[in-house]
Length: 193
Image 1: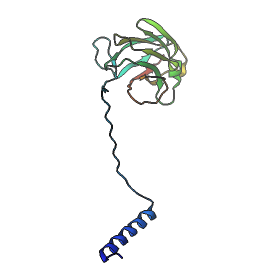
Image 2 (image 1 turned 120 degrees about the vertical axis):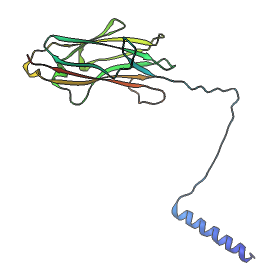
Image 3 (image 1 turned 90 degrees about the vertical axis):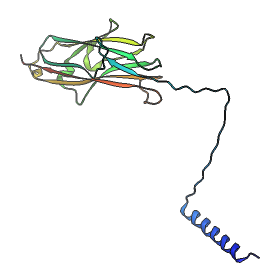
């Protein structure tokens, strides 16, 4: 037979067990460790920078054009630079901020990459994919043209982003692992004619 202190200990253990069964919660701390000899781990970086082509300073905006008239155009350039260690694939595309205005739908964009034309069409439809070269730089030139003369386009605004993002396997993959994403904002307004 159990002595008095053993019975109290057993009763407390049983009550504690009943309590834990009733609340359906338990906790356990487990630790496992394995040492693999000869393996190495290396940290690295992947980074994309949008730079001014004249002085390599950082850019946040590309087009900021006011008073566009029918037949007018503007030219801007950006250098996409690899500032990390890894090579990468990247995608450039235009993205309307908010509901695309009638002006945004009427702008024409001509795009040159390293002085070779890669796109010529509606501004909102632009998308391009490329691999960053071993030199670590790609030069992009953008010619934005306003061919329309419709009077409904007078004193209009177009706000859009030029978005650049890196990717490893698929340009539509979710951001995971190493990645970089940048945006250049653009504001274009027309005048009166």
